[in-house]
Amino acid sequence: MPVNLNLPQAKPVAGVELSTLSAGIKKDGSPDMVLVRLSSGSTCAGVFTQSVFSAAPVALCRSHLPSCAGNVRALLVNSGNANAGTGEPGLVMAQGHCNAVASALAVSADAVLPFSTGVIGQLLPDELIRKGIDQAAKQLDAPEASSLNAWQAAALGIMTTDTQPKLTSQVCQVSGKQITITGMAKGAGMIQPNMATMLSYVFTDAAISADDLNRALVEAVDVSFNAITVDSDTSTNDSLILAATGAADVALSFSESPGGNDDWSSFMQALTTVCSDLAQAIIRDAEGATKFISVHVTGGKERSECKQVAYAVANSPLVKTAMFASDANVGRLLAAIGKAGVSFDPCKVSVSLGDVLAFEAAGIAASYTEERGAAVMAASEIEIFIDLAQGSASATVYTCDLSHDYVSINADYRS
Image 1: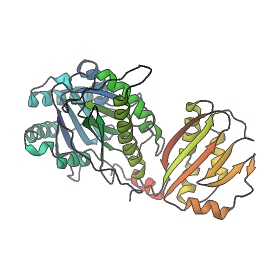
Image 2 (image 1 turned 45 degrees about the vertical axis):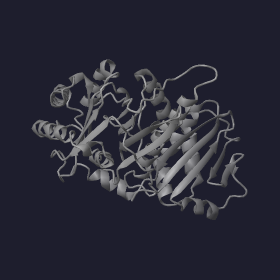
Image 3 (image 1 turned 90 degrees about the vertical axis):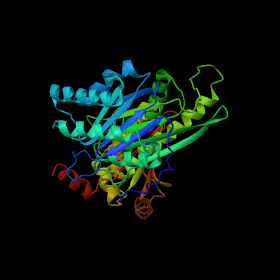
Image 4 (image 1 turned 90 degrees about the horizontal axis):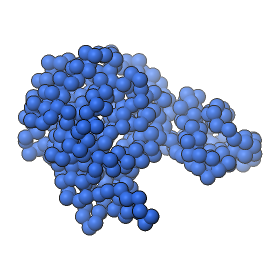
């Protein structure tokens, strides 16, 4: 069961229509295709996996975005098959599916962005996908395509090993008018995103240029999707899209003026909240997870080294299994911190488990007891605080424990 997963209620975004169905990709017959139609003039930005084995749809998104970022018209998503490790045939097939969407919706094929998630190394079932596209395109003309039910169905349709859909919204005031930001994400394993998450789609009804969307997305991702890890693995298909439809008739732009821009700040706060809520939801619903863990590192010379230490702790199998067992083993934390590749004075470092100081001045804290540490470890949400005592930089990474169920889920993934 997810660890305290309770996202704010989602709201539809004007200018977005969604259709979800079972195209027959998943063996169990569950929903596995989502088609999203965006209103004309919708702008878009995206970040993608840095894997050298990036999937065919990722390659096409990177190819299409430079020309269509100012007028993206459709997103095609399938779950159950990643179309990764499929070489030129996979690229040809993904482009053919973009062409099919373009034909069904009367838009340019370059304005269609494809996404896939699921098993790696298999070509998509071409005939099933094409039949699904035709059916999904027809469903977009129904009034229900703009309803909250359509959004909820889409969040279900992009799932693989997730146990719950991840869908949420934030509303903010801009120049006296209301804008909405709604996002969905999928991901539960193969998670340490590198510039994106497994799959995530965030939409707003504000009007924002593609360049400003890209600036906003990179900033929001750094403290959200690029601050989580389940198992240190980056997917071949990681993709995150931010789209702005302009349907709210509210224009936003980034300003470098000394006084800043209050409207942009309000938007960025809401966007970062949506991204952070979704990213943390992935950890709360991680494969086999029983605990949600926040690793806070302060006192670094640079934020990058704080993040490096945080990830070393968050990705340590010994730390993660100790968390699963509620074992207050401070030594495992010290070992992970020490191997991070960051230079610091070990005599100045302090480590706390929640509000319990566990290590300081190169030794176990005088006030520390196993009983106090174990009480912190027994909770479903755990905070670890590490002070490097050599600067003012800080960073936080979110992770989960490593349980028997994680092994079982991944051992059975393709069966």
